[in-house]
Amino acid sequence: MKVRTRFAPSPTGQLHIGGLRTALYAYLFARQNGGDFILRLEDTDRVRLVEDAAQVIYDTLKAAGLQYDEGPDIGGPSGPYVQSERKDLYRKYAEELVEKGAAYYCFCTPERLDALREEARAKGEQFKYDKCCAKLSPEEVRDNLEAGMPYVIRQNVPTEGATSYNDLIYGEVSVPNADMEDNVLLKSDGYPTYNLANVVDDHLMGITHVIRGQEYLSSTPKYNLLYDALGWEKPQYIHLPPVMRDKQNKLSKRHGDASYQDFAGRGYLPQAIVNYIALLGWAPPDEEILSLDELAEQFDLSSVSRSPAIFDEDKLRWMNGEYIRRLPKEEFIALARPYFESSLDDPDTYDLALLADMIQPRLETLDQIPEKTAFISRLPEFDPELYRHKKMKVTPEGALGYLRAARPVLEGLAEFTVPYVHDAMMKLVEQLGIKNGQLLYPLRIALTNTAVTPGGGIETAVLLGPEETMRRINLAIENLADYAEKQGA
Ligand code: GLU
Image 1 (cartoon, helix red, strand yellow):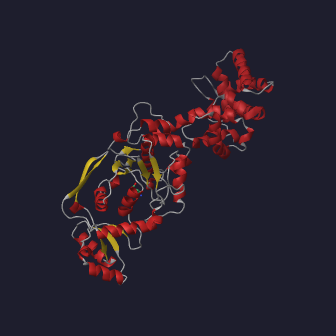
Image 2 (cartoon, helix red, strand yellow):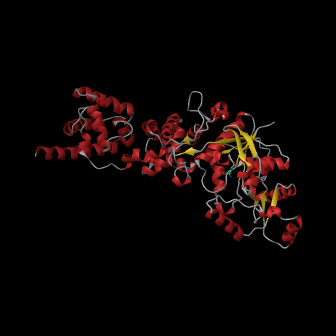
Image 3 (cartoon, protein in one colour):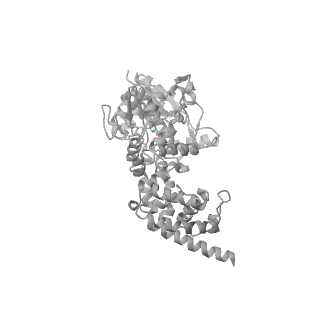
């Protein structure tokens, strides 16, 4: 039996972290078993549909590397893979369920249902449909249908006994039948509800392992009753614990930052997001930084934890930094380019390989690039206090002297490259009989007017080029001289 898993999102907006984790686990499980991973769009709730959401799902799965074997945009033998294109199938099986007594036509008006709901509320009870239409005779049903009365088809759940199944993660789940509702299977608009569609599709698509969120754990017995009524073999169920923001609160769409797109837009790398998401509920045997192939090798669905996973953005940031550092330089530059473009007037006038050397080791997310490179195109205001560093024995007065000494040396350089500037500065340090930092620290401040920057004075000078370097050194000398004069006065 070939393993077949599916990811079945509703196209209602962005792809959220919890959803992506479901997709990832289904993908990894299919991969490691030489099986198929299928994408199906569950778009039968027509009011919740969001335009372009399907495209967002295709793009996200592709960006994350979760390539599906069958799906709406690529087709496959069990298509169509969009539920709204399968309406006739659901009707056929809904009618078959009616014939078998596992479902019935319900003609109750919205007014009657509202009154029942109101009654339940007044009694402080949970609303449950009263099976009124289950008692209609076949003739009454036929007459109503012929008269064109609007109807839904409801599941006919037994009122006694219990229905149980075995979930791979949660173990035995048993629900008294009396606790289950006669849910609508086919709506009056002819669309199925999830209750029917998930069963019909998982069966017809040959899904062997249903991997989905824990919110379906207790309604699965109801779906199993439909499998039984139709004489179909049930899949293995794997319900996943929720992803939480903290112990009390679910990570939800309302918290804005919980979607894949948000993280990608804030400079997280797809591989880092995927790697981190894999750890939400599962722990690898040793190394945590794992490629998709390594995850597919090591992932173990049966050891997924039952307790809710807590989403820890600090850990994701750390992991993202690791991924950024491991990027080949060219790839880093390509990914960083849009961020360079937002902070540098004209990125191509700079040695981007040198800039990459300076910042690549110091980033956790790519969107830190503009802030860390802001000084390059726009020198911030002079601040004499930046030239004070106790441990390095740097003072504004000392800085002024050393910068004055550095100026002619830098001006006279044959080549303005890191080795040349470095040698010249080291010689000067020796001549002056000072520590490296006493010269290099003021040099860096003069060039950046920023307390913390990526890279030291030498790389910064080379990055800015000789002209801009001299302009900034001259400016610093002028400002420091003014300052010293005012101090002296
Ligand atoms: N469309 C459902 C959802 O987005 C899918 C649940 C399932 O995987 O069966 O929650």
